Structures are given as structure tokens and as C-alpha cells.
Length: 433
Image (cartoon, rainbow, N blue to C red; front, side, top):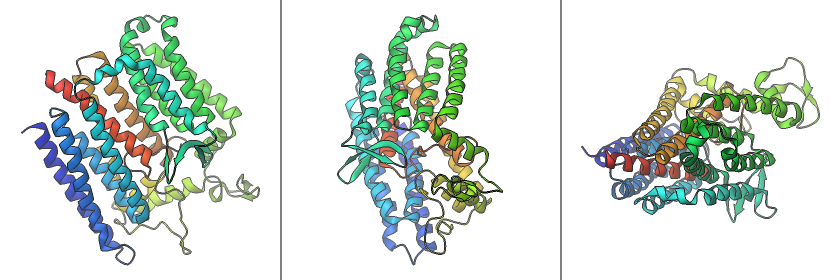
């Protein structure tokens, strides 16, 4: 069976799962959700049929499982978002259409040879910095929840840092491929352009108060540097610098200190000063309110879950129990309704995506392709770990999205472009093999 026929059969299975999911939500909440909800299953079949056709004609030998995995994760996200607020599911669906369109453009634009991007590495690196600086501009930049990460274009809000992440990975792959041998020797002058662009990116992220993305970029930088040079010393030095920077941020950045305090001590027996209203309150009723309610939601799901559409996310007055549930804490909603079994299966899907990505990197036959696949895959994996680790209190909570699942247009667009990049690398590797 060909790669694309295998992909088509897998997509049909994903469409069936999507239909079952929306049907479950409809049955559970008939009084609140119309029968039109079942139309979302048909919508997903049409959208991913387009994605499949684009892959079939542009990258016929590419990995057959990445598109179905992306489709399944996006379907899970839209199903849960629709269950929480149908109007938001409509907006998310529009962004998915845009994302699949850009996915198609990516495949067709670089189907002949994506490696020509190497010739424009410095331009791409500077372009990523420009995108990160856009939210800082006074006219288009928008501050939400204390972070200035978005630009507003009419009715749409977009986070350019998501696309900047992919552009920075392309720059790192091209530069490290060219300089890998001299970098392995530890010549400081060859680290100059690399550290300059990376340093400006990190400073920009700190200036916009986007510490979660700063951690993500730092991790990608270290992983790709190690993949290019094979020098464990560089990773060790990077971790030492990260530890020193984290300590400095804890001492001098109030926002970071609050996040770590919430992580270590989300519950208090005695009232403490609440920064939100200036009063003395229990921390679980103030600063750590979201995290504590999220943990309660996960615990309420137990092993089997309450069932799609049957979770409890509002109080008696109709207010949200967990603020920003559809974005930062959507995993908590899924854990309550799907239970430990359901979210464990979801994590296995993420792990399968990462496995396929690293397999593509292993099969690639040139340095740029290997590093590009490593960077894209590791960035996807690290982003998933950062947000899930924060929600379940393994690490301090950061405000980044769960790939494909969380509500957010810029995130889903960037992740579909990421899938397009991996398909291009996979197609070239399989074709040459």
C-alpha cells in the first residue's frame, strides 16, 4: 500500500472518531447545543480531504501518519472547545481552514527543493526577530493577561511569535549545518552570529513578558546545538546558564517569583497578601486559583472520566470555574471528561507524532534536513511538555498553548506549517531511499 493510501485510510478512521466525539457531545447536551454540531464532523472530513490531496500531489512519498495525527488532535480540540462555547469553535474552525491553506501553500512552494532556504538564513533569522518585535509596536501590539504578544488586525488577533519560532528553527538548521565542524571545535568567533540572533530573540521575549516562549526557544537552541555538534559540554554549559538565569529572574522579576511561589505552595492555611485586590486571602482563592481549580478538575475525572459534555466547568451562577479554560487549561477539561484513560491516550498520540518526527530526522540524508526535522520535532515536544507540566504542577505554569488542541489561531497555523516542513523533509528522504 502506498504512503498516501495509508494516510487516506487513517484519515477515515480519524473522521469516524471525530463524528463519534461530536455525537457524544450532542447527546449529552441536547438542551444547549443544536443538531448542527454534527456538521463539524463533515467539516473536518472536507478540510482534511484538502490536506490529503495537497500531500498526495506535492509530497507523495512523505510520512503517512503526520497529517492524520494533526487532524485527530485538532478534532479533539475543536470538539472540547465546542462543548465549552460553540461560538469559539466556529472561530477555531476558521483558523483551521486558514492553517490547512497555508499548509498547502508550504508544500507547493517548496516541493521541488526546500533546501534553498539555506541561502537566505540570515534574512530568515532577522525576519524572526522582526516578527517578535511586532507586538511591541504601539499601534498594532496588544497586551493580554500581562503579556504583549499579540497584534490586532481588524477582528483577528494573531501571535507572530508562533511563526517566528519556525523561522528561527530554519535559521539555526542552516547556520549549524554550515558551521557544525568549527563549532564542535569550540571557536568562539563562529558562535557570534548564532548567539547574536538568539540573544536578541530572548531579550525580546523577556521584554514582552513571554517567559514560556523564552524557555521554549532556549530548549530548542540547546537541542539543535547538541544535534549539530555532538558536544555534551555545550548542553551542560547551557543548563548552567539557564540555572543562573532562572535564579536571577526569581530574585528580580516579580512575575517569575509569583509563578514559582504558586507552583511550590498553591495552598495556604493562613491568608496571604493578594496582589489582585490588595486584601489578605488564602492563596488558593487568589493567585493560585486557576491552578488549584485545574487540579480539582483533573482529579474529578478519575480513571474513566465523566463523559464528553458531562463535565462541570461553571458554578451555580453560570460563571467559569477555571478562567481561560479553552486555552491554557484545556487539558484539565479533557482530563475531567475523558479521565485518566482518555488523556493517557491523548499523550500517546503526541508521543507518536514526536516519534515520527525523529524518525524523519534519522532518515534524512543531508545535514540541513536532519537539523530542520530535529528542531521542528523537538520544539513541538518541548512545547507540549511545558504546558502539560505546568497544568499538572510538574513545573511552574507558563502561558503557552497545547499544540493543535488549545484555542488559538496563530498556534494552529504555525503547527500546520510545522507539519508541512516535516512532510517536505520526509518526502525527500523517502524518495532518495
